[in-house]
Image (tube, rainbow, N blue to C red; front, side, top):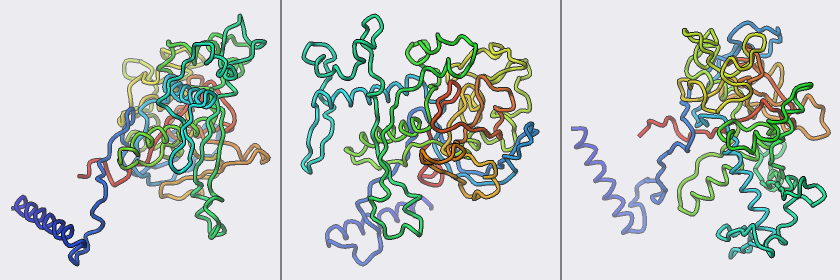
Length: 420
């Protein structure tokens, strides 16, 4: 009976569409626009779907610092997609190479002009990195001869800048800004994108880590390890580039776009880390860091500093250890992760309970305390307390560390991925 009714309804709608098309109108019916594209949500490669739900934020265990930075509160989180692993060296290298090639194309002059006068890179042109003529045109992308070791040609990393722009919706929504020109809210950014490989030496006094500086980001042995030495602005630049990469592919095909790729808020991150286990101290449940066989379940600093006991001396592969129930790897340990949230000690006392978000982009001249960004998950060099789901920590946004990386999310458009 239900199938018959559905078939009848479909036939009626089809008839109305035919009538509307023939008469040049809607036959007096409220049908909505008829030429709208279909929306079939797909899961971006390497991401998993996190459904909407409720999160009980706050400490999962004793607050060992007595800092009271995470008071108990219930919040609701809307669904999103999240990278199942931290962004790896090889994934970030795709970003680096895209920026390198874009700089090289501009130096060579591989630029095309559209009908409306806008210039863009002609990506169909191939860069010939060898050959005398090309070498002369690309000479500025390399270090000058007096800065080379053994005469090796190496990229001048200061040239690898990514320029992008974004619309500041928060500022545009303020009542005091009502009536201002749209251009007032377009922010233009320029970011040097190469990770700081010197962090391996800088972060640890009287410790020999030079091999990691020389090899960690370059060597194929570490391709699937999480990228580190990336500042908060660099992580954001990666997200904007990833959005552009996605949209540049889908737009010419007339396919509807998803929301932008971005860093998670600290509460989106915590909600995902818990994997549906609302009060569990760790992504795998808890309350212990070992399973029943005595195996350590994350990459951190066990005991008093037996770093290799958990299977990794520094970082490990981004898909090491078992994932949580949402399919996310290394939400505890390995590397701490940048979030989009500004760090305030008492933010839990005033954030909204509906998709809480607190952001602040400090100017260079503002106090250092205003430049703190929340990091979550703890890292390979942290003790067990810092890898708990509810533990908050922070780093200055303009600082790069050998133990901080990131992963991206994008908000799901709709109620649930299972909706038909």
